[in-house]
Amino acid sequence: MRRFHSALALSTALALFSGAASAQTKIGAIFDLTGGLNIYGIQQDNALKLAVEDVNAKGGVLGSPVEVVSYDAQSELSKYTQYANTAILKDQVKALFAGLTSSSREAMRPIVRKAKIPYFYGSLYEGGACDKETFVTGSSASQQLSVLIEWAVKKYGKKIYIMAPDYNFGTISAHWIKEYAKKAGAEVVGEDFLALTVTDYAPTIQKIQAAKPDFVVALPVGANQTGFLEQFAAAGLKDRIGVVSTNYGSGNQQVVVSPQAGKGLIASQGYFQPVENAANADFVKLWTAKYGAEPPIVSEAVDIWNAVHLWAAAANKAGSADAQPVISALESGLTFEAPNGTVKLEPGSHHLRQNIYIAEGNDKHGFNIIETFSDVAPSYENEKCDLVANPALAEHFTPESQ
Image (cartoon, rainbow, N blue to C red):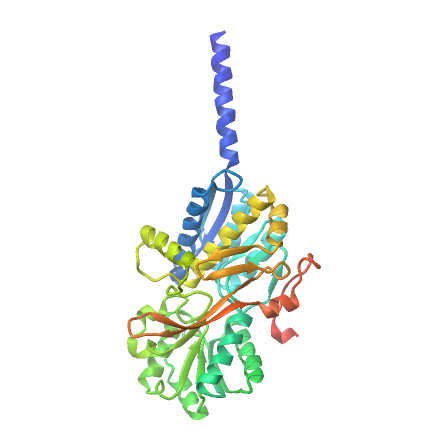
């Protein structure tokens, strides 16, 4: 009889333990923790873990803690597809937070679409991603460049030169620069698309001198291309030609660029650490307590912080962490008081309405915010992508295909 009671007690304990374990909701994280992109990936991963701690401290999801299953993509595209499949099939995650580059996003979109789980992409990008399961919390080109080009034309003049990387981020962004230049009554007088391996920018600088622009839209990616800014300043051009960018500072380039090159450079993004609001003050306090004050917090970290909180709010609103109820709740027009200001998830496009900031590089390897554009809509994505009316739509729209 005692053996029976002992066995019953053991089986009851195991059942309770099993129930407690299954009550935890798993989410997947795939970021570049090593390799050339880890300056972004480490902060994205840190932000996700901090956000989960914050969510769990406030009651978790449906009263239970959230568990993170994390993978290092090692700055290799093939790892994203490998680990996305592992996280979905083996780990049974309820949502996936992953990727920095557009190529990583595009590699994973078909996988999460087939699995029908929500996927959150938290990075500034060229825009146009449209998919029922994909939610973008970074700012798109139609948000950043729309305000930046208008501002720069008023500040510097109507002649523009483009320096950009030779892949979709650079080429699609260049198209948008031309579109917004036309709207502002300006013109692009020259452009140069360069491989990420280039280190000598003398030919590009000579082309800029010959074109005589009022300002350059510089979109350098990676350590080599950041060298363009140093060489441009060393050539003595900074004093008479403005330099503006949508991605300068997104990987803390301002920390490694000399004050001579960085001071006065203009950047446009959805977040800079000096943003002043209560949510950012609380976020920075949490971040610095856990990770320290250096390096500065990048916009991609905030994009992931926002993504986790929007997902958790959707699951709690839906009363379920299952994919379809969560996606429906996400499409209800959720808002969140974020470090970068109030953000709202657009139901049709799955992109965020959010503030866009214009910041100027200072001589202390940092930024001063000089103008705020509030509640900027992802206009191109809203125009092309209505996933409520057309849930089967799955496309990466580009302006060239219009």
